[in-house]
Length: 310
Image 1 (cartoon, rainbow, N blue to C red):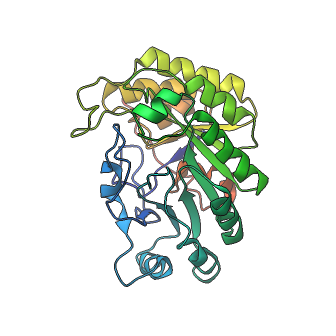
Image 2 (tube, rainbow, N blue to C red):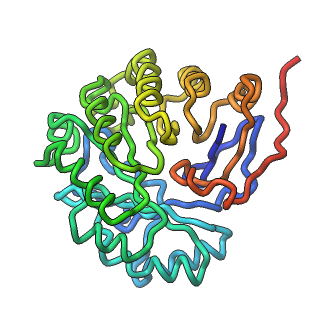
């Protein structure tokens, strides 16, 4: 069982304190700006990212972060009105970041069109993350996009044609806390050779139109874990960063262990030992859970002491 703790936020438990919190860092190519202002986020996720400063390019920023101890970047940003992150002018720096600095580069693309797919392939990025949405209503009402689920599937097809490493995300409960197109999104993902499917759970954020909503029902979320595992028996399925905190997080994380998911980002207190008690060998990585393909190529922390009450 794999556990992940990238430097996307400060995190630790009694079981695991990451030794290098700056090892894998998030970068925004748009600063805090996002044209869509989706109802579930309204660009708040960008607040915790490192921005490309005026007068510097992506390589300059990567070199600066390398000096801080970073070995990899998640290159993301706010969306354009067309649904994609404006990456084209930045991708030309990726080959130098990989070859001269020895860093891994994962990008969050948003909706993909042919020109972006070609540029991503030419840049030889390590992987491409994107949300897959299966309901036209969610695309319209939550993302404010004049697109359909077919456009998201087309993104998968374009990335697949370019033989890029695809890391789709499905946000459970994205339609204002209820399930709508998640199963259709899962079917889309199943039609393509994806590297890892990341499941995340809607967390209503303060200051957004969803702030007053409860998160999706726990039993439905756990049921979807099982559906995803059965539908994609040979594909890695990980539980990603975003999910409700408090006791619910522990319930979801233990369910992910029980149902055979492959990895968990920022595991709840006690979950590493729980996995061990279920006969699994915990493997701990200070990388993004999208990089499950890296396996033993990445430095692994194997000797972690776990305090067991009693």
